[in-house]
Image 1: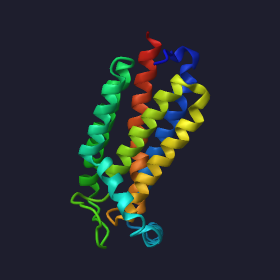
Image 2 (image 1 turned 30 degrees about the horizontal axis):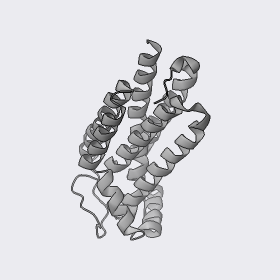
Image 3 (image 1 turned 90 degrees about the vertical axis):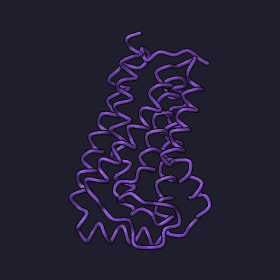
Length: 211
């Protein structure tokens, strides 16, 4: 696999975007928490549920299994095995990021205690609704991978980030399709996961620059 170094990309250019994304994500998360009892957010959630509920159910169920707690960790460990010889930082960081997402999701869920949507759930769901842990795992894993491959192949970085965004958004919206989350739960999941990704990126960039 191609060797690479972040010395070709100044630290400010590599990390600053992710730092600002994390700041914006935390602001969005706080705004959503403060808006949970407001009618305008409820209107948005109802509209998105009506538009997406009971859509591509089979695909959504597959994505639900893939980005579940066990599924996302198995996938992260598989990627760790792939990266182990060529990139120990990626091999260690990806599973840790996914694990951190689920831990943070649980902490927020049981603090906020938002009930699940009161419609027929097309997938298993037992914990509180806000935020979507599946959405957090999808954002963390896809964006982490996009960052890693963008350093290896900078000429294709736009493609990597677009694919990562597409995958995360589809995984997030699939939770609304299955009726187990509100749309705002998905947004909150993406917002919270930006912090995890930013920490991973900063640690990864700092370690590479120390080589």
